[in-house]
Image (cartoon, rainbow, N blue to C red; front, side, top):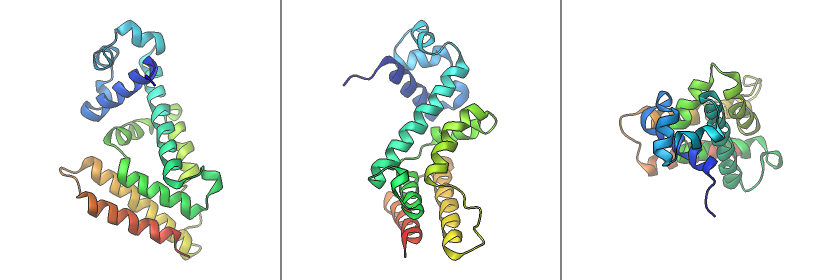
Length: 179
């Protein structure tokens, strides 16, 4: 199935963020990347803010689909450990620099942060009772480690070898799903 122009625009904008950062997202740069006209971009997104909000929703939706595919079921059909294990594996395998940059940018824009927050609350909420028992503390430490691995991969001057990254993710996932 051929992607819609809207999806093509959003994927083009994500590629720009991955390559050049959020500030590179303009109607002209996205139009050039998507091989569309500026008017074609503005037809779908009348403002840059609307385009950025749509990028956040698009990536959060894609992230949730990836989490569901990894876990084999929707979040509401999984235990807390199973949800977090999926989050750890997906973060280690497919989280991108563009997602990190956009999430950082969203920290000061509640409307942009909402799609990310919704996914995080379903899949990897920060436990409020982490000091209460070992299992809660293990989930918190594993979540923080998974986030750290993602940031390391996004910001490091070189990537961790895939086998090592996968081994770290598997170790963390086992820690949160162990009986």
